Amino acid sequence: MQERAWWMACLCFAGCLTPACATAQGQGEVDVEALVKQVQELAEANRALTERVVELENRLAESEQPPAPQAPTEQAAQADAAAARVALRTYWDDGLRFETPDQAFRLKIGGRVMFDAGFFDSPNYWSLGGAEIDEHDGTEVRRLRLNFSGQIYGDYLYEVEVGFADDEPDVIDAYVGMKGVPVLGTLRAGQFSEPLGLEALTSANHLTFLERSMPTQAFVPYRSRGLGFSNQFLDKRLTLAGGVFNGGVDQDNHWNVTARLTGTPWYANEGRRVLHLGVGWSHRNPESEYGFYARPGSHLANKHLNTGELPADEVDLRGAEAALVLGPFSIQGEFLRADVDFLPEPRDLTIFDLDRFFTLEDRHFDGYYVQASYFLTGEHRVYDPATACFDRVVPRNRFRLRGGTWGAWEVAARYDELGLDDFDVRSGVIGGEGHNLTLGLNWYLTPNVRLMMNYVKSHVDQFAYEGDIDIWQTRFQADF
Image 1: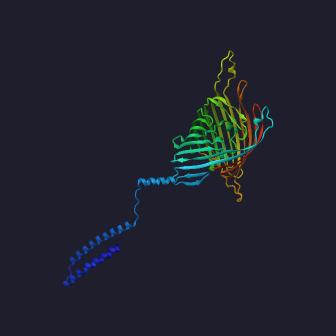
Image 2: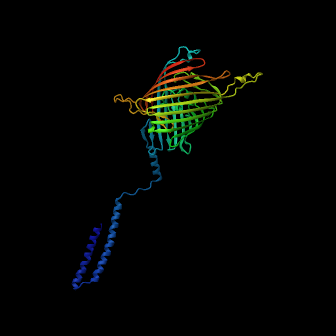
Image 3: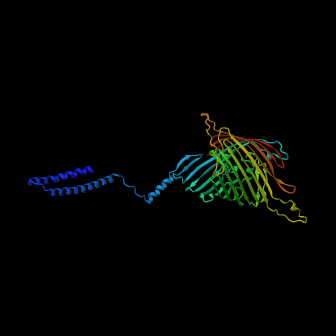
């Protein structure tokens, strides 16, 4: 650019200098002052010309650049936002998942299918019992469920799970929630599991045995409707959950307060070393009939341990839980107790008032279990600090018949005991006592497909009959 301006200035200078020189030569002398003046004028013209050339070149460069983006209109902004909401990313992560690019909206579609077959060897004759208490071989679809869960606008949660194993659809979970609430953490309102018990809160998809222990069956509430919270403290080493509930699936006439406190004093090697401790408590005011029952190791078995419906005024449930994971080996146990305060019995006074000697007094029932498992292929039980429960086992190598890999194999054993008897010479409750020894073998073909086999040696001691039951049961399970 400067070179071009310089040559143009030189040409102008030469054009102007030639007439001056010719005039000077014709007169025989040179006018120096005139020449100096002309040179100054030429220099000024060159400067102005140079500035003009620079201005023209700048304009040319600007005309070649793309136009600067304009601020979008409100309509265009709304269209872009709508397009962003519609554009869902679809992927598989132990279930079919959808989410927006900003992850503010998420949806997971899941489900489970569990098919059981059971075989029983029970006494041909129960002492003082009858044929109606005998077990019969059979099969059943233990669980068939479809689940939808996710979040809205990043902060709001929802879940709906429906079961189809029975004759009619059954709502299992149905709640909405909000996360990030100060102090309380996550809030949920609707129907969901009350926070009580390690075995009870661990999903059936990830249980070590086909059925939960008898104490868990008898004492821990199933699902309830209410308002609950859960939060984590001390770098996720401490969890606190609680809530207020209005009855369960089959009971809707009383209020309950339930809470669970857990701690993880040891969590190392990405969860291969874990120590879990916890306590739970639930205060319930049925002021009506309330009962406890359990089946001996199989859902196909009868409810041999059963208190029947009790006229309960208040019920307090207490539990203590512990679990230890040492690589492929783990051990877990819980103790559960129920204290029942009975309603006063309506009665007419007599001259001797003998009825007061036969009124129901406060009673308590309890039970416990201890279990251990070992992965022959080196995997370990997966502990989730967020929920303080156990989660999905992922085999190191999925089962591939042609590839020569056989998934994960786990052996396990459990002993559980339950007592539903509490009586004396005046009154009491006779619900029976029993204990089970369960041996298990689990084959994890993939993270979502599992084959389970259990053998249960159960002893039942009822007031009306007593005996042992041998149970062989298997389950094919697929969940996502």
